[in-house]
Length: 469
Image 1 (tube, rainbow, N blue to C red):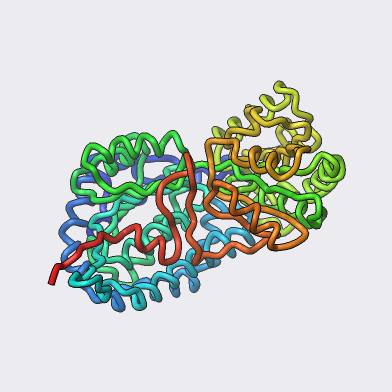
Image 2: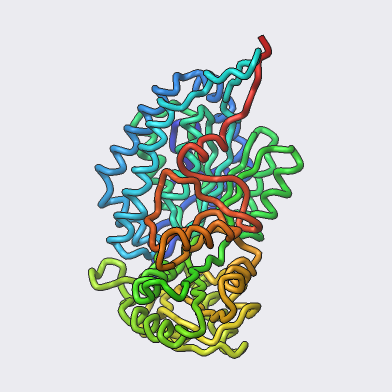
């Protein structure tokens, strides 16, 4: 069994217990990781607090050099890490390499540059000198769907800011976290600056969120779990950053390039087998174009081959676990019970082993249906019509508790931007605009608090002090 990473060394868990790691494509046991305990969290926080004075006093450019070295080592090991991720959580190898491995390296590099360029203590307002200082010890609690990227989006800016970290990775797909700990160990990150305690959320995650020695907790996961983290953190009035659920809409206006809009929306909805919080899982299209949009969506979905993550023909790997597959199947059944029309895919399990779900498309979806309101987190797209113009389209798009991401498609960029400005959501792609890892990412409403990535992500981990001269 593997060990925890505490105070610069690999150490066994105080609990002695373990968690099985299962390959979702084969349902086979592939590894075991420690089921950490509150005592392990205590040791990790103590190490992080002891390391904080020295690390926070390290010149930002020097902190950046460590992050750059880590990014370079991730690139050097990218094939190995991508294979770990494909085996651990089921992403097709090509996607695991490009999105799940090389993009986190790019994010680390961006924080290496920001650490050197950011003006931590040069701003003056009248007779006041404004300082930006590290918030302190950060508890990072991360999910399984992008197991390296979501860690780097927290650990990268925290370390660049001068914070020390206690990481609790997902117990469902934890192996990328162990690979990253190995990277940090090899590039010479000082002992105690980064600590990792694997384990179950109600045990390790809650101990991290509640610990009085943790100054900030950054969590990515479900909205329900985010509420629990925030409640625990409130007891010690620590800072909280939450990146939670989504039910993002792709709004297609009548003058848009319909084939491109539909094809791109389907691709986004099915990315990572639909296990993406920002996925555009609701296509909102004018009723005059509805039948054609459904036809195009069904044709596009038919090209998403389900299979072995290491088969080059595979576009959709398995869902991460049996529990996740069963959850998605329940939603598919619920959609049919509600009266939505299943036009592609469905709840039938593909032949063979593995936690697979076919790419699924629902037509005849009305606002307020459960499948239109709740995050399914699987390869399920709902197509919703509107009839009365842009006001109705905006009302449908904003008609869920979430506001994480979205898309707008129109014949002119100006028209698309005008509508996008009306949406209460944190990030909107205009006519297929590409994801930008330097732009702030985060949500409105129940999609969370705070922002990740770029300069905005760095500032989440900084306190503000003014000196009156």
